[in-house]
Image: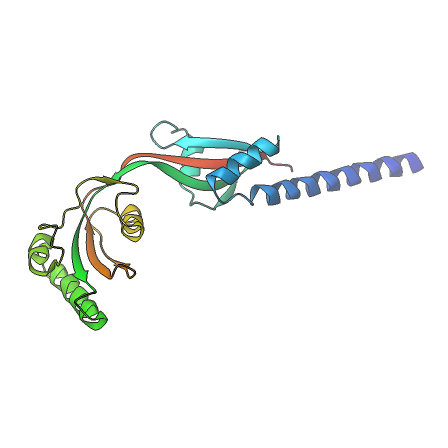
Length: 204
């Protein structure tokens, strides 16, 4: 009888140890916040798999589920624990903007003008008309950025255009340069998204 108890104890102990090990693995996996972190962890720990998914090539059901998550999200799918670490890729963006010069206008004037521009756009004025009337950028007559890629624009402007959808009207501030914008995104992002995902085998 004592052998049965001893065997049962060993089984329970092993199961607890396995569960504890898995939780430790989850904690390690969740440490990755950058692409570099992800590959360093995958190189260091054999139980971690790093997978780069391509939005235009990886289109099976699992890939679609992983692309439906946000960066930083975790999910257990088909017996594996996944963590979405980061998105990267080669994208082209395009927008039109109305630049208001903070070196000339006071903050209250800028806020009032941006509100007025948005109201007039909502009332039916075209962005081109509003640009011709309000844009203070001497180097750009029509406010069209043309196609641009990462690093070509100041970061706050690029980041805002990246995350908005075609047709969105939004505001961008670059206070260190005293640049203030009303922006309309005029094209969808073109290119391929590369999503870096870490995973480990799920232990029941």
